[in-house]
Image (cartoon, rainbow, N blue to C red; front, side, top):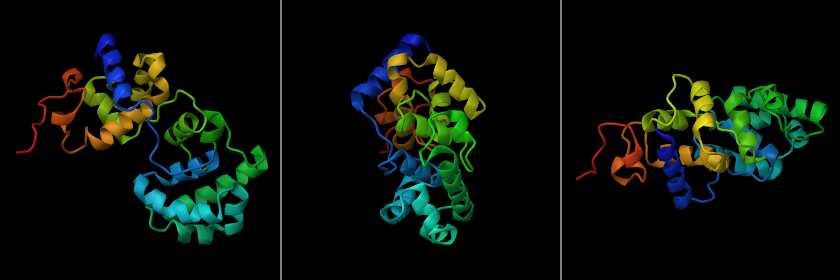
Length: 213
């Protein structure tokens, strides 16, 4: 995709949704960190259903430690991989209290050192909680970037690196959410809804899908 097309692509995303937001419910950087940790291989909807009652009783590292791993596991048992996630969240809480005064660190390196936190989770926290121009390449962004011809790559890191190079600076803050939401609701995995896509004329994907009869 040429630079002029990329500029137009993000101008359209921005016009349609000037201030995109994550669909995970959170109020603090710590709540966001926990929610993103829980969201691996799970939907935002399922995570929100579990975290609403959880955060009502325990939404700080100390409160979750006081709650304990067994009770945390029970609170999130409707989420996939809940046993491993509960273990990682509790271990992360201990590290945050011991090393960071209970605060969420603001660097990728520190975040990735936490149990259960990979590059994607770290990038989400840095972008959403701290306003950094990071791009967390999940399955949606990976698919959309390749389909559009915006940033083709065989791995999430390759796509992330290419996106960082081609996205105009003024759009980097929100690019992560625009691409995720586009993949979640329009450029779907099984059948992209090209007939209602606002950037179909810029997209390299062929053949375009037709509207259902």
